[in-house]
Length: 510
Ligand SMILES: Nc1ncnc2c1ncn2[C@@H]1O[C@H](COP(=O)(O)OP(=O)(O)O)[C@@H](O)[C@H]1O
Ligand SMILES: [Mg+2]
Ligand SMILES: [Zn+2]
Image (tube, rainbow, N blue to C red; front, side, top):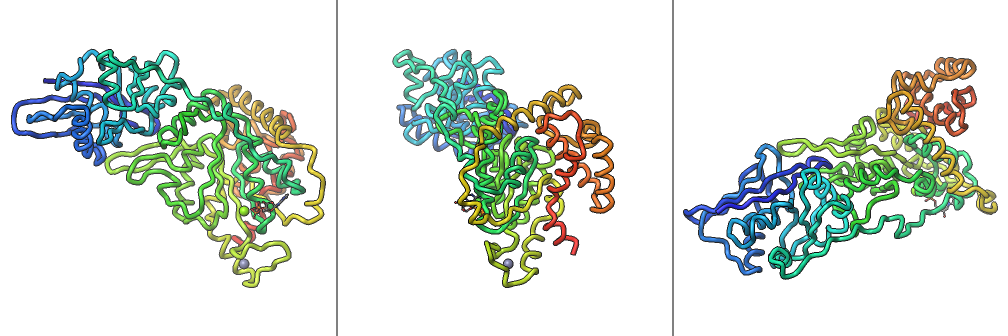
């Protein structure tokens, strides 16, 4: 008595095929799962026993062995319940083997036989499609799995009984339809037009959007830093279609693809500073992408930056450098994509430093607060600006003529120039200037003579480090792209040098 079905194990965002093999042999009653299952998989025994009972099947008084192959691939999560139950039902001759051979299955079972939603239906459906199989999944995951393609055969069932009836031809399950995309369901972003004054901060936001640069804003409470950051999404270009799938896979694995809607917009994640390490970078008892991965191809906004745990900020250096987050598990490592744009905001000192407010605790207060941000993290932030308090005169100004739509058009054009240039230099994997470094950067951002003269003298007078030099080139390249200029000029170098965050640097030198 033997039954088998395919399922999937997740390795990062990739779904790898796994065979569930069930053999029932005479002998003392037992239920053994072998093949590197984690705790959640080992617990499936009780859920399966009860769910089968709910559809009128008792586990046989025999020896049941369940093998998850290949054995060396770690199996984590509760989505193995359904495939194990289906293979078991084949072994018990409750369903015909040919009914399920064209499918892989994922799903968690409730004690009453209901099939509960699990994360990862989108990558699982894509993985199943790659081995020419359809996917049996929980009903709630159907709209998400259906994005795998028109040719993907998806069976989305609410209950074990409805699957049995479907296979017996008693009640057909219809193919789920892909859910609408988020855009079609209408999200409205706050507009940059709402921000009065603050012209140079707005300019820096535009530069950050155009080149994908990380941005740090330092300024007194109430100056509009949070307000500015929340408007970044409104000026970023939309995701390309292959990027939508890339982002949606991560969100699917985190169980955050609400209603199965594909992500069409760049994510904007703003975790609170009290968020745990696991919530921010991923991991914990269940492997799950954290906020940094959920911000993949979008924005991670860290408001009140110095309030975050130093260990969390430290862990962020890896994705900022490599675009990937590696999480150590008990016996393996998982990599999630995390190509994010960091936007951070902070007050100059812990007391806030609001308008007309001088810190009573003196300069130590600011120095201590700012020292919480490590040098290596600051090194990875291309744009560091000061946002001054807004004056009442600014607030009574009429709304600016230019809003997010106009800025977004410039940003999109600047990004297209970058894409084209990277393709031309056989570096098509790069998308923005922020990702560019080393020799390629020196080649594509080589300033003209006047620009070179300026950067040389700045290197002397400002004591520009090698990193500082490259950061200046990167930003200057983006400024030239916003100007539609092929060559980086003196004016671009000069502006790039102004985004070096003097306050933080001085605190550090003293
Ligand atoms: N430049 C501005 N234009 C319009 N309103 C502003 C501006 N700056 C601040 N505000 C108002 O002040 C509030 C607080 O701003 P916020 O972005 O939270 O400041 P910060 O994050 O710098 O402490 C905003 O919700 C907004 O109503
Ligand atoms: Mg704020
Ligand atoms: Zn203070």
